[in-house]
Amino acid sequence: MSEQHINIDTNLGPVGAVVTGIDLALPLSDGVLNEIKNAWYQHHVLFFPDQDLTPTQQADFGARFGELDIYPFMKAVDSHKNVIPIIKEKDAKMNFGGAWHTDSSYLQKPPMATLLYAVEVPDEGGDTLFADASAAYDDLSPTLQRMLESHAGVFSPKVVHGQGGAYADLAAKSSDLGGAYGGADSGRSDFAESEVEHPLIRVHPNTGRKSIYCSRPHTHRIKGMTREESLPIFDFLQAHLTQDKYVTRFKWRKGTLAMWDNRCLFHNALNDYQGQRRHMLRVIVQGEQPY
Image (cartoon, one colour):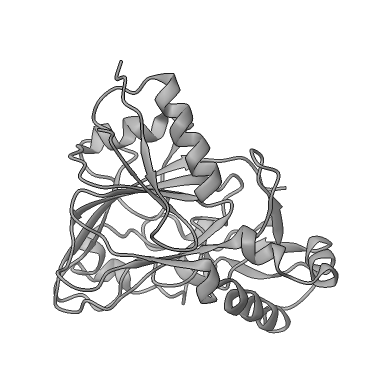
C-alpha cells in the first residue's frame, strides 16, 4: 500500500481545494484515504492534477468511497460499465451539464460523489463553476430557511431528458456528446418522465450541515405547487447561491481528476469553447436518499 500523504492548497477560490503529492493510480492506504475524505467533507470538491488514469483506475478510486452507480442516459466506455465519456466534438453546439445543478438529483438515491477526469481539454474555455450550497444556505434568513425546510420538491429528469426536454434531440446527433447520449428514445422514456420527492434543503450525513438542494433543471416543482409557481423560488435560490462569494471557477488541465460532493455543491460546465474538442470521463458513486 502507498505511504503517500496529501498536500492541500485552498487558494483557488471560495470552495474547493487542490490536492497534490499523491498518485491515484497506486493503491491507497486507509490513512491516506481518510485524509482525502476529511478534506473532501471540508472543501466539497477536490482537484487532483497531473494524474494518469485508465478508466478502471478512475473507477477503482471512486469505489473506495462507496458503490458505483450507472448513469441512465449515456453509454459507458467499453472497458468499464461505470465510466461514461462526456465528449463535445468541434462541430457540436450543446454541451453536457451546462446549467447549475447537482448530479442526477432525480434518482431515489442520487450520487453522493462525481469523479470527472480530463482526457482532452480546449486551449481556452471549458471551465467548470462550483458553488457552495452549504454556505449559501447559512446566509439565508432564518424565516426563509424554515419555510424551505418545511417543503419537499418533486424531482424529475423530464425537464432535461424527457420528451421535449433540453436534450430531446441529442440522440440523433452523433457529434453531440460524442454520440454517447442515449436519451429518452433508447428505451428509457418511462424513467425520463419519472418523479421522486426529496427535501428542498438536505442534511449532509457526514457533517450535519444543511444545503440548498433544489435546482431549475432537476426539480420540476415544489410539492403542492405548480412549476410556474415554483420557478421564481428556484430562480431566487440559484441567483443567491451563485454569487461570487460562493463560487470557484476551475480551469481544467489534461490529467486532472475532480471529485465533488453533490450533497452540498452545485456546478455548471461552461460552454464557451466552440470549435474545440473536450473529452472527459465520469464516474458516479451512489449516495443515500436525501433527508
